[in-house]
Amino acid sequence: MTLNIILLGPPGAGKGTQASRLEDEHGMVQLSTGDMLRAAVKAGTPIGVQAKAVMDAGELVSDEIVSGLIGERLDQLGGDVSVIFDGYPRTAAQADALDEILDVRGRKLDHVIELLVEEDALVDRITGRFSCATCGAGYHDRYKLPKVADTCDQCGGHDFKRRPDDNEETVRTRMAEYRAKTAPILPIYEARGIVTHVDGMADIDVVNDAIELILNSATAP
Ligand code: AP5
Ligand code: MG
Image (cartoon, rainbow, N blue to C red; front, side, top):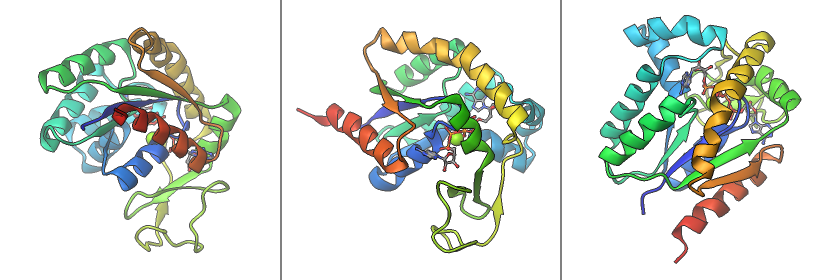
């Protein structure tokens, strides 16, 4: 059975962390518009050039660009792959676009999982975040250090990096964008009865267990 789920939550809520667990454990595919845009910035594509300043300021890139990226990526994947939307949709226009994108590809949204985390914890998480420069595995200065110091658990790399938008000032703008433009799309999905709220303040493993329960409920007879 092919699943299509949205992980919704403010910056630092744990969307990327949980999406990558679902990739590793269930072969689902994470579709993170943030990761796609960062790859475009790194490659210097026209989309990347356009997006860089917007992302560095913590504001939202245009709906057309991100919905275009999602449609393209779904086409590359084919129809029989389960996907996790991470950081998309983020506006009412993107929620509408996603309905259309899924519909024309014969997919339907199964779950919207909202990760609930207190605002102070978000700043703490984001300002402590770093990742492996080789494979992208995510870490945190206090909550998720590599098992062997300065060595990536996943690929053994020794080079780590931090995101340019992971500073306190930009994080506050990103949160304001979330409150103003993203949180208001939740009622669209609540009206369809597909939203589940998960305590994102819990340990990473506990959050993962809660998400597993939700996904299993989709496959129950
Ligand atoms: P994006 O990359 O999507 O960033 P974001 O939404 O701000 O979310 P983050 O990636 O910061 O947080 P996360 O929820 O993935 O948390 P993570 O798992 O890493 O977007 C970046 C920018 O791109 C946007 O600002 C915008 O400009 C643009 N953009 C992207 N999509 C767009 C769209 N659709 N429309 C328009 N513009 C778009 O966890 C954070 C840290 O906390 C990690 O260090 C992790 O180890 C730790 N952690 C995770 N879970 C826990 C836990 N349970 N307990 C303790 N620590 C934890
Ligand atoms: Mg993320």
